[in-house]
Each structure stands twice: as structure tokens, then as C-alpha cells.
Image 1 (cartoon, one colour):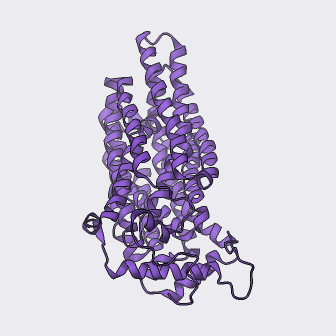
Image 2 (image 1 turned 120 degrees about the vertical axis):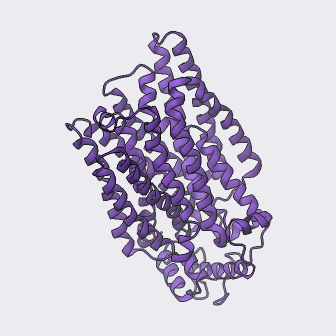
Image 3 (image 1 turned 30 degrees about the horizontal axis):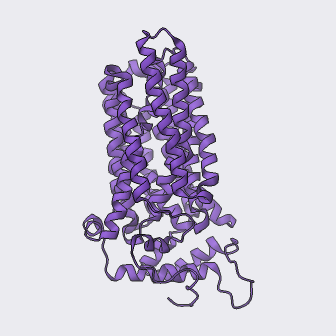
Length: 480
């Protein structure tokens, strides 16, 4: 991979950092007594703080059904960055709960756009053999941003008064500003350019991205067609074929069996990914730690440890995601997730049955949470960021990704609103639901998800019964 391609991918992955910081900061600030007292939060309004943000994510994701195809991936990102400035400003200066929630909603729309369009953009800039690692890097960036945010949450807890949470929230502007500035050095997606008939531009972008990247495996002779030229020929031929009978929008997807199967896979994945309980554990871990008998600043310290463990194991998962493939990575992750969920439920139930007096069971429940995290961090985010855009052909890629992320956020809205009430009312019994969902998730992936690792985007169509007009090896003509 040449330097320009690497920097372009790093830029796309900064979208994960922007999202991770914005979504992760509430994990810590709900542990600040000053923040809770200023806005007079209770279980219902605390749920509203999360659900308002994710409602914004939901509508932001839906915007990607139209924006990336109409204006391009790059312009969509730039628009979202500007929207993020507005949301962060409202949150930082919020005089009351209404303004805070409005700012969270607007910031959520911006992040909903960014978190969905960036992996799509990255997949279209990446060569086939690193696409899984790019999804893994996106996952690592989210975990790094969670980790940094959570340790910052501990640091800001030592600042006096309301300044602590206003400064913390205000730093959202920094993430969006870096992304907006970096966008001026980014190319348009070559596949989007081809879809608009801008062939010369697309070829120049592919040449700049994939020239001297080590992708050509021939003897280097004069007759060898460079990788970027063959890639361009394949993209042009496949998109021309797909545009002959366009099936755009959700109705078009539903009418075509191979597209319908792709959409089912995406929706199934995002629904059950969230039903592993990542949001209840991630966003409300302070409340969980308190339920397990921890108090003082220790819950905030453990929030930082949670983020650090997530970074370590997401980096491990990213390193093997292309080598062992999507399916094996998934099953390794879900084995640990399921074991962690069962142990958490069992030890927490036992802890409560002892009248919260035998601290050993509380400690074991805490360790079970981190077993769960180890499994989730390995690949479950990376799987969605890599697999979702790569199984979709260009005419429905933006629509399918947007629909998937909107569905994910719909589930999250429900979970963030319900979780504080459930933890207060039924405690450990709430997590029994997620154990059953894990089993369904594993079975669904086993029977319905094909392996896609190391295949060119245009050739994945064959896995779903669609025609591949020309393979990469056959795409040697100057014109396609």
C-alpha cells in the first residue's frame, strides 16, 4: 500500500474517532454528580440523554440513503462535520436539558452520517487484500477513542464545578475540525466517479491510490497491465452492467432476490450485534459497577480500563481478520461473548442472592464483563464495518449501508432508554435476554453468511448468484 492510499484510509478511519468520542463521553459524565444535579436527571431523563443522541444517529444514517450517491462520499462527510460543530456548540453552552438534548440530537445526526459513510468510503478506496484490516482499523479507532474519552472522563472528574463537563463536551468540535481539514486532501471515491461517468478522474484517482502498492504479481514486463488499470476496467464494466437495469432504493432491493438476501444479512447482523448487550454494558457500565458494590472513583477507573482492553483486543482482531476470514473471526468472537454473558448473569444473580455481601461473586461478575468485552472487541464492530459495504454492489451500497446503520441505531435507541429502568427493576434478569439472542446470532451467521475475505468488491456478486462481468485477471483491456 502506497503512502497516499494509507493516508486516505487513515482519514476514513478518523470518522470512527469522531463517532467514538461523541458517543463515548456520556459514559463518564453520567458519573459526575455536578452534571446529574445541573440537569436534575432521573432514570427516565437519563435514558432520554442516550436515546436522543441515537435517534439523531438513526436519522443521520437514513440521510446516507441519498447523500453519498447524490453528492459523493467526500461532500457528505464535509457536510456532517459542519453539522457536528452546531451540535457540539449547543451541548457545550446548554443552559437547560432541552438545549442539551437538542445538541445531542444534532450531533447524533452528524455522527450517524459519518459512522456509516466512512467505512463505505474506505472499502471503495482499499485494495481487496487489506479490506478486512481496514474494517479492523476502523474498529480499533472506535476503541481508541472510547479509551481516550474514558480516561479523559477520569481526568476531568478532578476539575471543579460545571466546567468539567462543559470542557469535556466541547472537545467534540476538535474531532470534527480535524476531519473537515483533512477532507481537502482526499480524493472522490473512484467507484462513485465511474457511476457519474467521470472516467478520466476515476482512473487518475485509482492510479494515485494503487500505483506502486505491490498489488501486481507479474514479472514486471512491458506487456503487464498495471493493477490500477485492470481495477478500473473491472469497475467500469461491472457498474455499466449493473446500471443497465438499475434497482435503486429499498423497493428495488426488495424486488430482486439477490439484493434482498444481502439486505436480510445486513439487517440481521446489526440487530443481533446490538442484542449482544454492548450498549447496556458500554454506556451504563458505571451503573453496573455500582450495582456490583463499587463506589467512589473506582467505577470511573474501570471505565478507562474497559476502553483500554477494547483497544488491545480490537488491534489483535484486526491483525488476523483478513488472514483467517470473516466467518472464523466472528465465531471466535461470539464464543467469548456468549461465555462472558452467561458468566455475568450467573455471578451477578449469585451476588444478589447473598444479599450483596459476598464480594467475590461481584468481582467474578466484573471479570465476566471483561471476558465479554474481549470477544466483542476482537471483531464484532470490524465485521460490520467491513462486511456490510463489501457484500453490496455499487447501485445499492449507500442505501444498504444506510439502512443497516439506521436499523442498528433503532435498536440502540430502545436499549439506551430501557436499560436504566431495567437495571433498577430486574437487574441481572435483564441480561438473560441477551444470552438467548447470542445463540440465535451464531446460528444465523453459520447458515446464511458467505465468506468474502480477499475478494475484489466487483467479484463478490458471484456469492449471491449475480453475474460478474469480468474478473480482475480478465480485465486487461484498455477499454471495458
